[in-house]
Length: 171
Image (tube, rainbow, N blue to C red; front, top):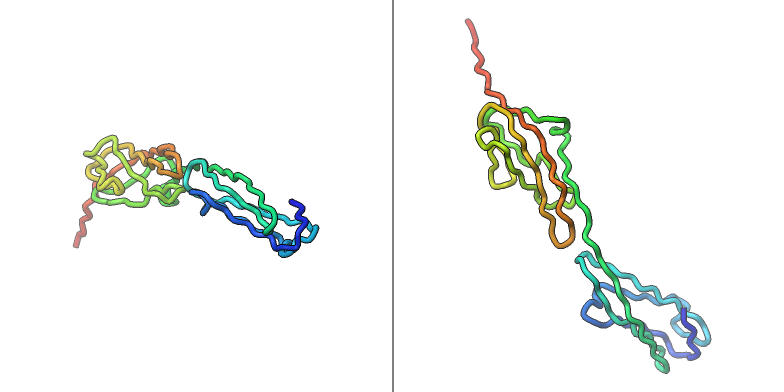
């Protein structure tokens, strides 16, 4: 809150390379500031990690006051979550079954998979796994993070692949 002894209207301007990440609003009672107080509210919103600064200049025509603004955005944590269909200790799949979207990252970024045994479960284009042959393999889901999220902690599931059963119909 600042005291201005002038009848001119008060203006607020933000300048600098990071000015677009800051916003300033002036209270309604500050349109003319004859020995009145004015509240200037500054907000900072940015999703890019790092420190940002700008300059706020308040002016009523007769007086000018400059304030340095700064803000910082930190990386966010993210987690991998297995879908409802794949909850539990293991996943059982028949030979030939392809699975995509079994796990998702809370960030919304794509999850990639690796397999402990490509002869049992193969990985297709990093994002799909396919049951190849009977046996057991570990599938690990990862998300490498980006400019705004940290790497997710990997999540591993045991996948049991079963042979397709041949059915006989007797007449």
